[in-house]
Length: 543
Ligand code: SIN
Image (tube, rainbow, N blue to C red; front, side, top):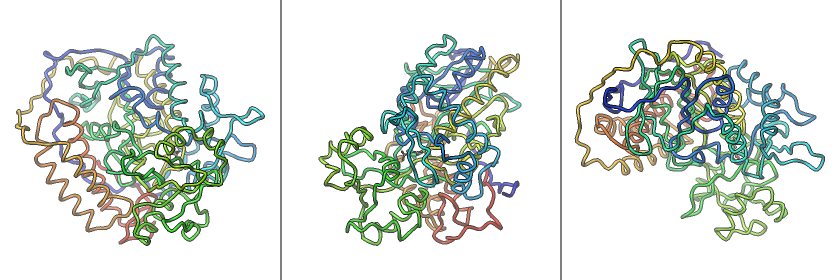
């Protein structure tokens, strides 16, 4: 890979979304502030607490509202006797299409089995085989069975619950739900000193911290069609960029091939492990098309399967394709995939006779806040881990089920880094008096819900699975126009701040997608369908 990234100009943004006056704002002090209650945030909290730090962990809604909690398929790790670290590394690098950081990949893969074992010890109910070993299955891009799952297709919940049980054993961790983080606070040297946020009571609060760990998760809600929960609105990316963080790989949004597509149903994920267990994709004429597109058919990497589905939908003039699992024993299906079984049954789909209508949707933000191997960002005292971070593990595309593992590995590293920082006297000390003024604005005629609906549709149409120059330019023009009358406003509730954050991040994504005039990983340009290693075997950064 070319070490020199391609640099785009970072957006010119108002530094804080709200006026700040420390003298009139309630304040809290801690060693380590963790923003986000998914796998990375929880694992970081455990490590930092074990090292003696005082932790405050805030999350936007409840601890159940995260991509982690909703994860179905599982966690990838070398657990099978015929598998090897070399093979997991090779599969991750191949899926990442030349943009992975080799050291990061090696670190994550090698730490995997130990971290899965640790979860078992902490009570995660991984499904087991008859001989008592952890049951593993396939997903696209994996050359060996290595996806461990728990409670059938409820893996994320099982992992989050085990971590939460562990977290609750520490009396130096305070969990705060329904806390909306508005902005990171930085000093004149650009170092992070904590955050300003809104509590569940609607009051502004500053939390000063020696170390802040950003673990805010994903951005799927930037798209009309997504597997992600409501909280995944890219806030972490926006607050990081306002504070001066370098964001990279923003053009790489991963689309999951199979999301339930029924009018009235939420766009629920239909786990890839179903295809790992033999499910077939059929078009509306019931033709099994995947072999036409890739030698690995249903188990090709996600970008390949998503594009194949889209192409087949166009060919057949249909809004969806089908997933066929009629070969699976009905009772086995209900046991192995209880979430999906309940979901499809509620729509009168009998999987032993009927096909499941599916189509792709936005699933995972591959890019994010640039971090080094120790989770450090370019901002002093600010660490990042989990989906919000760009660690170099995924490159241009994420291998399925590598992200829970990444969250554990880098959550633990971030927790350790926080312990080191705790012992120092710098950090939040020194900026207790601070004022930032923004002129009041008139937002009485602004319907942010309408802006967001239009934005999400625009992203789906113009910055979606297949991109090209004209729609990307049009998206930027429209988003910039919306930004002109939304970003200058001062809101006092999450809906307005989310709208500002989403507009900020969407424009960066469209710009990065325009700049990468090639196709690589999740980023497919119909006007530049080939990979171009001469120019683009490198990251795009906003710096
Ligand atoms: C799935 O279950 O298909 C999603 C797993 C992942 O995104 O890693």
